[in-house]
Length: 268
Figure 1 (tube, helix red, strand yellow):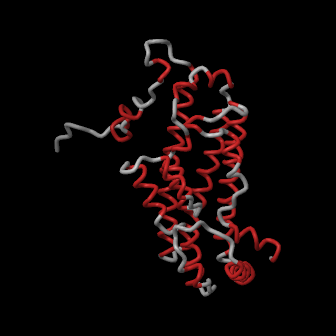
Figure 2: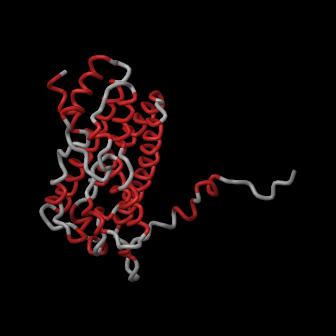
């Protein structure tokens, strides 16, 4: 058998394309590139790759919940939590860039802002944080707009968890199971009653609930570290893309994804 073409490491990972995507705008006018712009680009591209993987894993976990496959759900959730720790750790690298290092190329960002990350909005939506006002950041008819709108209309991970627990005999209120999925997740006393029963009666299901609490806490940790990184880099200056910078980001701190799981702590 003739093998005229072998798949190489570079081919498989499409390294030629991947490594050509770090374009330093500070060098586009013929000048010398600002040293730290490469770091800034790489970090944010890596974030987007991890966001892609998180969406891949969370979709899988949601599907597995529909199949009542608790073992693989827990394994997948552990992977999600491990990736989240990497996302937080990457901020340590970004914080090696001083405010002056960032200012040297910040104007090149123009209207670009991390708030325009459509994958991050997809992550928020799949985790139940539904905010229709974010659509305005994506032009009508664009692929980004189509993606966030599609996610907005899909059941969240929490929706899948509640249906899973309902099938396990922990009756969830019809008002929650049948609610419009585009509504944000809110605390519900009847859901909390069912969750208390889960914790007291079924130790096999408790790890699922605790992994969700870990996920919620991990996202809050990432938001906090992100805010502190922004404050450390630009202080109280306005952010790119017309935002209020750190002041805007602080509004999302301490917003719980799964409020019922936090509310029951005092009742266990």
